[in-house]
Length: 226
Image (cartoon, rainbow, N blue to C red; front, side):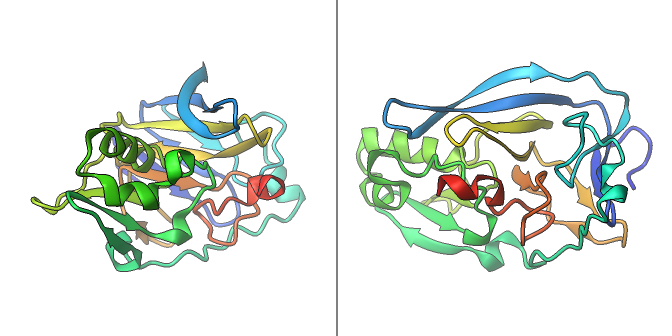
């Protein structure tokens, strides 16, 4: 657990996420276009909470997004199965003329921002053109799990969106389901066994209880929309 006053999201054994710190918790709706493509985020309801609180991880609480203890009644198995390799160790890279794309597929949260305009994997090859470059940066930076990261070829630095430390409750409008917890801005995520998951600007944590990549989301919440 973090020291008093610090921000952290602790992954408990077979229970909730234990959150500490003053940070915004609000719905983040995936907005689709007429063709059903994910094109932007829209902020929704914000939730009040104390300095330390618990967010549901099993997916069965009746007090969403907060834990109501249901995980104990259903014998929720929250065993972590995600790789403990770093993002860079997991990611492949597709090189473009001015920008490149890092891609760690196991972190996909199925938000589908990578699909419009010929897909992000096609756009990376056109990043020497202003329009495709802007679209490429939007698609890579909108990925809530941080699977996709745009990289400047000249500086070799990641081109990350600026995100305040906060928690987004993803609402998948097209699939009509609740998505993951979108952890933004680089918040530490320790486990009760003392292990600390890699701190990244964009992380998607499972909140349906069905991911095979716990604690990360693997898109299981939207399986019917695939």
